[in-house]
Length: 102
Figure 1: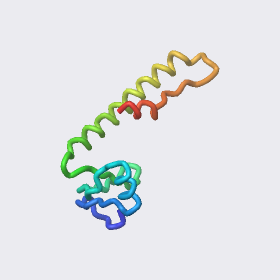
Figure 2: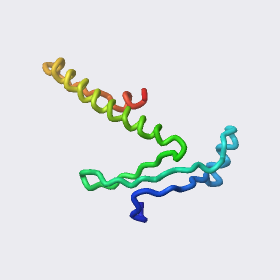
Figure 3: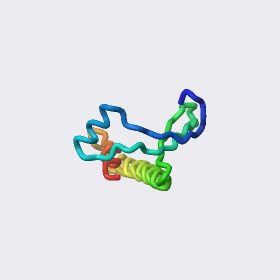
Figure 4: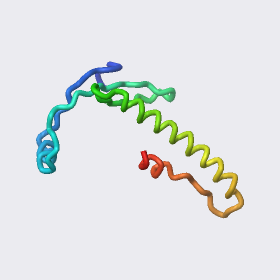
């Protein structure tokens, strides 16, 4: 992020502590090639994204599903607002639970 580059390929290597945990659970400790992407949002905020160089389509599929979830939760909230407007408490769609299903 500090470099100001929009995109860069890096090799992500686990440190000694992470390597020890991986070995304890029989997980691979090989370095993982990643592409780091820097994006400036409409709000001016800078967002950092990481994607696998080997399976970049997985990143776009996940992004699509998250956006679809956001749209569907917005629709569900509009329906809940209409159906339960006369209730004492406001009903809110639990977006965290929706994301857990992805």
